[in-house]
Length: 223
Image (cartoon, rainbow, N blue to C red; front, side, top):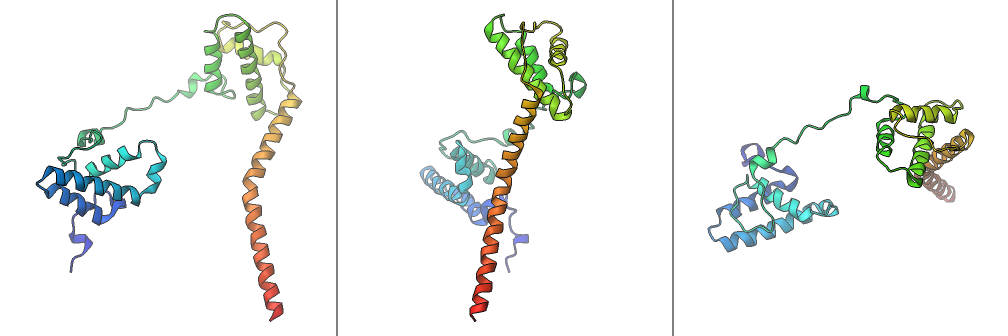
């Protein structure tokens, strides 16, 4: 008997053995036009087997890449896209650079806000820069209240902005931030809306179960 354990190992198991056999047939074909025709048919079948790939913009390119992988990068065909090589596929991605937590001076604000403050120092003085400082300051106040529900004065936020910017930013004269109570109210409204969105499907499922149970009980009573 022909067991899978004695067969050729599947390179991309999600496509199955039939697709791999089709790819092997392409490789054995001597006529180039025949290989091209078989390759197009195989890619079309692979696309039908994995419709989720169509959600990506370059799904056709991916299918041809998969065809090359299944063929162990040994295909002599006229593909609509450059076929990848084994070295390209196995090439390790560049190591990502992670931020050093010690570089974040005020961790309750986060690195993005600190980067925004430093970016604001590059803006020319004027109304746009003043508005940007106001937006950043209000966001810093929101972030502070996320970790500390106590009232915080605007002067503390302004002082932190100056510290992060190394005194390169100038707080606009008369700048007043959103009131703490208003920020907490806004955050509570957002949280309630989020919780309602998450729990709505659960309530719908529970109501459906309750109706089904009631229907069964009604049918039993009729019997």
